[in-house]
Image (cartoon, rainbow, N blue to C red; front, side, top):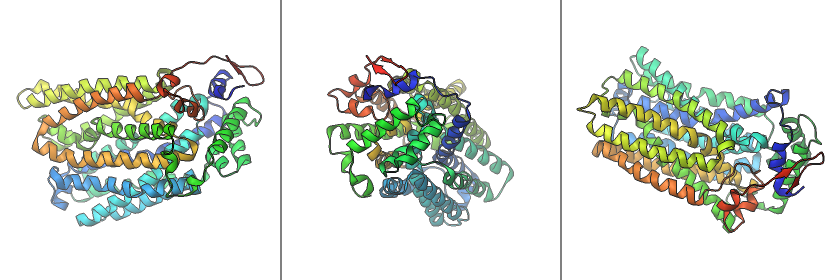
Amino acid sequence: MSEDSSHDAAIAFPKPSLWSKNSLKLYTCLAVGYLVSTMNGYDGSLMGAVNDMEQYQKSFGMNGKGSSTGIVFIIYNLGQIAAFPFCGWLADGYGRRWAIFIGCVIVVIGAAVQTPANTMGQFQAGRFILGFGASIAGAAAPTYTVEISHPAYRGTQAGLYNVCWYLGSIIASWCCVGSNRHMHNSWAWRTPTVVQAAVPGIVAILVLFLPESPRWLISQDRNEEAIAILAKYHGEGDRNSSVVQIEYQEMTEQISSSSSSSDKMWWNYKDLFNTRAARYRIGLVIAMAFFGQWSGNNVVSYYMPTMFAQTGIESSDTRLVLNGIYPIFCMFAAIWGATLLDRLGRRNMLIGATSFTVICFAIITAGTAVSSSNKSASYAVIVFIYLFGMAFSWAYTPLQALYSAEVLETKTRAKGSGLNFLFLNIAMCVNTFAAPVAMEKIGWRYYLVFVGWNCFEVFVIWKWFVETSGHTLEQLTEIFESPNPVKKSLEKRVVIVDEKGGNEV
């Protein structure tokens, strides 16, 4: 069988039962990885809600707007940027699991520093530590989920990783609603910061019992361990299963053909840039990082209560409730999107969703402009804020982590994921710091930026984003080395599968 046909073969062979004992074990491993994604979602909704609380504003002398608010938010992102050199080093040197464990422990420490803060300095120090740990765990976890997912279901299994961003957001939002209603002192905002340590603490314990990524094990010459894991989770316990043998062959060939010691040197990033194909890959990672933060979602996540206030909703409790309902809708949209990734393709979903966000922001802009004198316009703005979030979540939430991990090679996946977090947080820093200033100075006119920028995103995705659906991670090497990667990625192959494996025609 040709090297190019393994994914098609894996799909053409009888798929493993979704409810078999080993499939359920695989879901458990993936679920622990998914929980890492809750950390950024929790912080996004936490700070948006806390920033709107009177008790928080009194504790630190804030007003919810302006540059001082942007600095508090941005400290978390600066912590994530500072962790960049350690992301690839830990995940490549010690394994994906240990990187997740270390990152989660650091997050727990950050929450312990942030919660008892009585000065803004201590509060910001806690947020810096939180961001530092979240970056290390958050760079390793999507790499782990992509590498351990079954090839026939990779789109859905790995795509669900980022869906748990909204699980964190939902927990934070409703925790803030409850504490704001029932606590009338500083514990209104301290309680949600205590809860911020819960999920990372659980992950830190459970991750120690998970299997390691088979691709990482092969890169460490631990081939027997790797094939045992593939057999257990992808082959229903059969080492001689065609899916297991095809996967193992492709992994060993791809890793050995691209063998380099750079993945064992934390400071060496040359493999991310030393060839045209490598530069193309990292270009897509960087583009996805910026598109995933500059499409307007970051502003909506952090400043939704402020956006609602601009429409004339004066009750803080009402704004917090609306803030809490929002991620529930988005989470269901993201789950739906994850189940469609292999059917519709990554490119189609990104182009369609991004195009719709242009329409949403155009209506949000126009509605906010006249909302002070038109109650119906206020309601329209709320509806389209929700529709924007659902459209963005439908495509970007499952793909933001998945696509960036897919387009990278095994030897560069951990460092590339770290670089993804670096650029993602640079984008968030610009957005997070600029948004409160812009909203204070020019109000609704700031939303016009996203109308124009999202049009640009649609063009870039159509022109340069390759289709990864229908290809194994190893097959993507051929695609990126072709003269026209986009065209090559859209080519269809026919595979006839027999008892011995399969033949491509």
